[in-house]
Each structure stands twice: as structure tokens, then as C-alpha cells.
Image (spheres, rainbow, N blue to C red):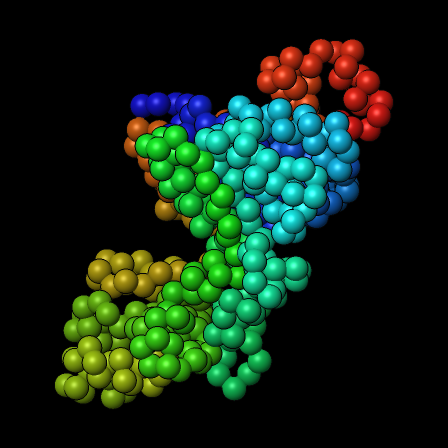
Length: 401
């Protein structure tokens, strides 16, 4: 087992803001040395709450903690000529640069792809922007809500006959981050084979559209826009139902005979015991009515009792839990999903979500807590560029670091 991670030895410069920090964190989680290059005032994520103990501070943002776990941090003013020169020096020995500046901004600082490639032909540059580097929308700005709308994600979220509902969290940003991390690793594989780096131009809007499961395929198949269905899954075989004390996910794809016999034993089957419901296609066509009947059946059941019995009968039912209940989820506990991370400067340990994957040889782990602002500036600039203490002090006095 390699405790140093699948991407050990990979050097990454992270020039992203809060929209794309997850991309580089995914690389850091696999053991890459990710150096977060922040302006002297800190990344935008440091100003986003909630804050530890409700005390706003650039080192107490829980939002920033999540997106920057396992990274190091340096401060560098890239708008200053000396700051750009230092970044260029770091890029000469880096494998990857991940950035989320507006199109043309890096080039305006003399740090564009042409300059980076000239200095380091093996470098991979991953640029994540709302609409890519070219095209009529290239200079438009967009937040996660706009991206979910223009990516088709918002339109299909909500109930029929009602306005669309914004998806929970930052799903457009996250979709782009995962595509960016995957593209970066593919580019590294190509670089290892050819010696050539490349520039990845990633449109967040396109990544969002590609992540909406069924929408594109349904359009190309039927030339129709997908409707909003509430909690009915687009396959029509799943829907959320409400028990007496919580929510569950119904499913009509399991052993239908055992499910309907159970419902019949409770006197709640109505017409679902008709022979035609034995056919999967009929259950597909009658999904709304079928789940209405099952909703009536479960409404007085305690949620955990229903789930336990359903799983004993090999029914693919599951609890739908609120986020705060996940800390007490037995399955997540058994898998060791949540991990304790020590913050020695606070004298406290905090529980973090673990990895979104399982590797046998190089398992996910927390290598380091999220960095304090500029915590590693001195060590990175000394080790990579040989900048000594006196010059570091002068750079700090000038506001460059």
C-alpha cells in the first residue's frame, strides 16, 4: 500500500478562486503537491461563510476548509511584474497549472499559455471558465445558478406546472471540477508518453450540460426538452415518499411479488395486485399512480422500520436523509467515511467528509489540514527558487507576497 497517494510526485500550481478550487483539491487528495497561489488578501473562498464559531476570518471559513484540504498556500500578487516572474519560476518545475481567471487575463500578465509552454513544454494548463476561452460568451461572467440554468440542470429540477428550483449546493462548479481533474490526469498520461504538455480549455457551462444524466440523450433521441417531474426519477422507477417520521426512496424494480405481498398484508395494495403490474413496462407506464398508492401505504410507517424490513426482503429501498443526519449514518460509519483532521493552531480536531472513491493501493486520506493564508510562502519560495529570508522580507514589505 502506497501511503503517499496515486499522484505522489505531481506538482500543481492552483490559481483558482472559489468556483474551481475543487478541481485542484481532487488532485491533492490523490497525493499531488498542490500549491494554492493566493493574492495577498486571500482567495475569494476565504470570505465565504459559514465561519468557525461565527467569527469571520480568512482562516476560519468552513467553505474554504472543505475546498482546500490537503493543499499548501502561498501569497503572490500576480498583477505585479515581480509576482508574475516568481509564478513563472514556479511553473518551470511544475507539472500542472489550474486556473479560473477570465479569458485573456493570464496572457495580460504575461503568463498565458504561449509563455508557459515556452518555459515548460511539458506543462499541463487547465483553464476553467464559465464559457470557455473562445466563442460569443467568452467574456460573460456567470455564477453557479446561471451555469445550472444555461447547462439545462435548473430547468428539469422542480415539480410539473411550477417554476424550476435551483439545485442544492454548487453542482455546476463541481461538475466542471470533476471534468477538469479527469482531463488533467488524461493530459498527464499523454505527457508521460509524448513529453508534450497541453492546454485544457474547459467550459463550466458545457461541463454542466454534460453532467445532467438524461437531458442531452433524451433531446437527441426524441428532439424534446425533458420536463420537470418532481421527485419521480426520469426512468420512472424511483420516487421519494414520506413516512411518518422521514423520507424514503420507493423503487418498483425489485422483487415486485414480495413487495406487493407486503403491501397487501397491510391492506394498502388497492389495484396494484392486478396481474398487469407484474410487467415492468406496465409499472413504467403507470408510475404516477403506482407511487401514489405506495405513498398512501408508507405514510404511517416509521421510516427506519420500513427500511429495515425492505432491505431484509431485498427491496432496493433507501432512506432519504437530511445532511445533518449523515454523521450518524451506520453505513458511512462502517466505511470510515468521515475523518478527523487536526487543526493544531486551534487546538481542535474537526470531522471532514472523506474521499468520493475507494482505492486499494493508494487509499484516500487527509495529508494536511487546509492551509492558513500564505502559510507556506517562505518554504515554497526557498525550496523551489532559492529565495532567501532577506529577499522574502523585502517582497513582503512591497506587498508582493
